[in-house]
Length: 116
Length: 111
Image (tube, rainbow over all chains, first blue to last red; front, side, top):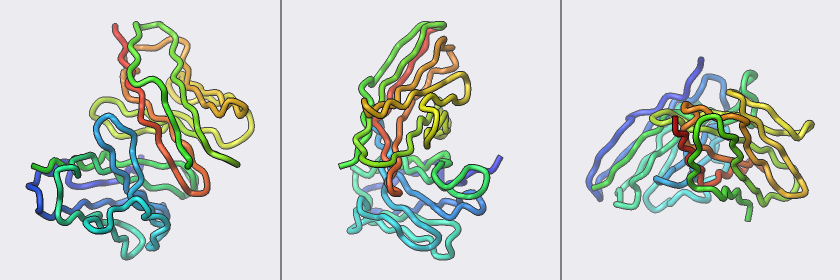
């Protein structure tokens, strides 16, 4: 079964450092999402791509967060500088293709960030 | 603003008990609704979805949900839960490319 790949699974960093997360969506999925999930809460959308274009980044804290999907395939989410409140699970999801359809998201395992 | 709300934060049941988890949405117009499940240590997985048609949708592992438009609800049900259903359950709604998740309900099933 096709999966959304994310790395690293766990990241511990000190505040003010830079961190980066990588996501490789299911092959053929045109839409890619980055969500942030704080413990005890539901996922919140940070950014959504359609191919290489940003569709929605209204909730992305652009002073410190950036995301790119240069070739319309894999994507990187960066935080610089990291703050204590950024500790969370960062989830990548993708949608599209013939099997799952355009509106069904498939999630990766997530990258858990701890900022000390 | 569009939102999805789940009223139960933590539900504790014994095996074989019936389950109903509440979900309400505040979207106008056409909405696609979903239930996702996150088992301990695993990633979010789709349980079931509603796009149109029969408002009673069946998903994996014996779960079902009913879309009641007049109540803006999409409650999740299972007639008899098992210990292996212990997980966090998230309701989500999609409208105009805007996907929102509820805060989640943690289900603990006692053996």
